[in-house]
Length: 211
Image (cartoon, rainbow, N blue to C red; front, side, top):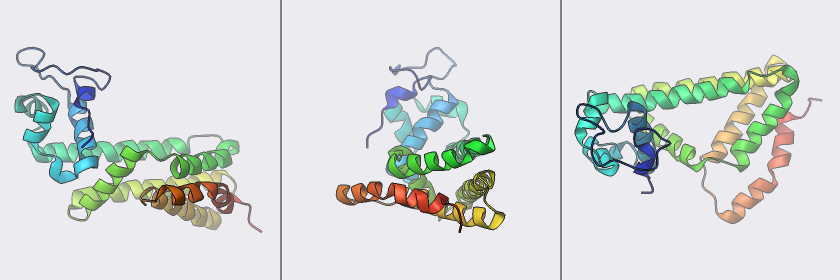
């Protein structure tokens, strides 16, 4: 598993990891650092990899650092899911916080970002969460919240671009299923290249003016 615990010491900007807490009675890692590292482990190993002893060992800290911030493992799991949900919802809401005249360009930017420049860590995180959601109602609710926010804000973006309510809903569905469906699929390099070559045509199909 390719995880770098040095990134999560005290602040995600630090490059070194202390072997012991900074001072007596204070944790070596803050709450956000635990959540960020757990999210990275989730992406690589799934929820089964999120065990307190394993995380503490990888981070080179005692379990006391964990219990400073979390009551138990379930509290960490809930925090990971909540942090992911809130970040994704905030992200999609920012996509539509623009003037109407910029909406069409923003749609093309979203298509380009998710279709041709996917974030591999985020993709693996989402795959792990969706797999986990099949067995956990709390996670399933979080995933549903994110999906609804994505669709709602995609519709709003197309409405800003001047499409009717019906057209906006249809195109939002196409946008959503294209960028997120594609990001969840695994391709050989040759096929991925063909898809990249087709990107402009797909973007034009989704955004072209009716009629």
